[in-house]
Structures are given as C-alpha cells and as structure tokens.
Image 1 (tube, rainbow, N blue to C red):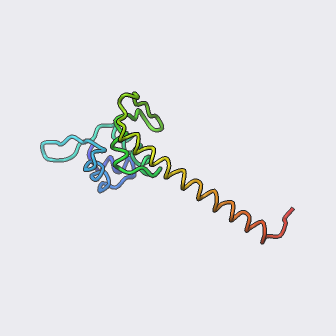
Image 2: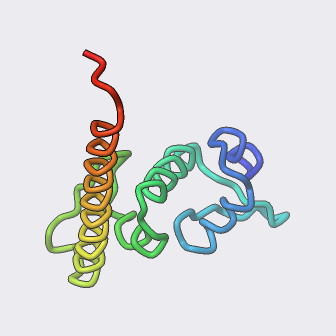
Image 3: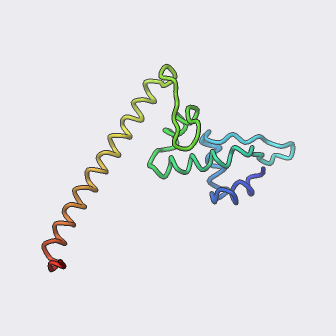
Length: 123
C-alpha cells in the first residue's frame, strides 16, 4: 500500500510516517517510480509505534526494542539478545515513569485533601 493509504488507515499523518522511516522504525520498499510501498503488516506496526510513543518511549528506545516485539503489548526477546545498553536504556525509562507516577500520586492526594477540607460534607 502507498503512504497515503497507510496514513488513512492508521490516522497518522504522512509526514510522521516518513519520519518513522527516517528513524528506522518503518521499512517501506521503494517502487521503480520512487513511491514508498508498505506491506499490510505496516498498519499494526504503526499502531504499535504510536502506542509506544504515547507511553513515553523515545524513537531511540523504540528502535532498540522493536525487533523483539511480537505484537501490541507483547515483548518476547530472548534474554541473550537484549544488549546491556538496551536494558539500561529501558531501566532508566522505567525509573522516569515511576517518578512521574509518584509525583502524580502526591498531587492527587494533595488535591483530594484540599477538596475534603473545603467542600461541605455531602453525606
């Protein structure tokens, strides 16, 4: 399929699809006329890339783990295939996520305490 159809089917602008190719996340073939040609599996690949980006992973992280992904939500790398640099990259990202979770939980608790103090009891 051509880039326009992939864009329509995934809701991802063609500009971003080209960027994913530049970042080595997608690998379209090139027709004789220079047009990009994507396999049917590219729809799921783009959805997976979008999900990983939405979860906060960088394109660098995605490029490192993408070869090991079997489908959305599935990660099955053989342990011997995960480079120490990739493991360290993911560990740092997990720590950043945990820091954000902790901050959000503190803010939620503070806001809840504030509302409990200022709102009349509605029981």
